[in-house]
Image (cartoon, rainbow, N blue to C red):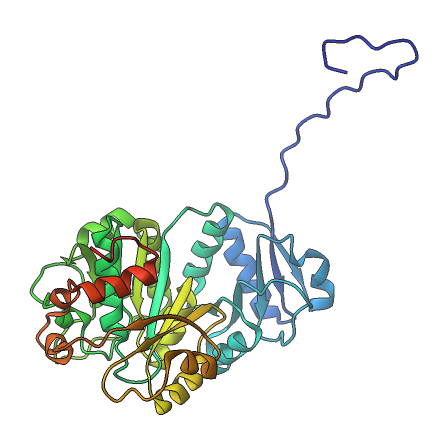
Length: 368
């Protein structure tokens, strides 16, 4: 019966349409028996304008787990409900030290917040989770061993993506790598570097960040200074704020993570996908297997670097470390000199390099 028909004899009376009632805003779920953590998170959620349900253990949390907008677990939680999504944030106290990161890796938590230092970041994160904005992909690269070529691959990927017309930001995540800007021969190009962002927390305007960054090879980049003076390492709150703005302002964020443990902790968890670059050698395969133990539960694939000294087939290396083989990185003639002289962008114009990068990005323009 359509709404214009009259009910016939014996038909039940038409029902009035149910009133539209706005649903309650999705609440955050905190699982912890630690009173100090509960108080801290309650204060932060109130600042974020959200609703919080607090339970003491996973048995009590199970009925609310999947319906929650965001699941946070305290550092006293060691097990998760079966067949549930991983918690978004592991919250602990500043004094928990390295144990907090080890626990996050063990339970698969996506992010870590050490309170009270990370309070501003957590409030911003929870506010965004209630009304998430569309953003670009964050692709991280790291070397399975030292000198694997992850920085080179990151530059070539950023160059290829920018060449296809995408808005790309290349980020140097390795404060001990000597400065990605040197590999681009871009140390004299004006713009922000990591030290200029020290102490930043909360929301960063994506457009303003993009306008303030230097440009090389058709893409913006954020580098550690290529200078002898050691710069202070960015804390997790600054990293999270910068990467959030980068994601909102770019279609692709290419993140050269490095192999430093602190860099892995700060940057790798912010990635949507990670590529591990490893030479086709036995020791590299072993080192890659070790590295994987320090990576978060992010989709990860392998890029094998060919060239002189390669003794193992790429599929064999991929099988041995348990990763899907994403591509084979060419070892072009004069690559070492190009790296040293800041000519990687020039090398990236070679057809074999364009084909490699296009394959990783699923582009069709790598053959021209």
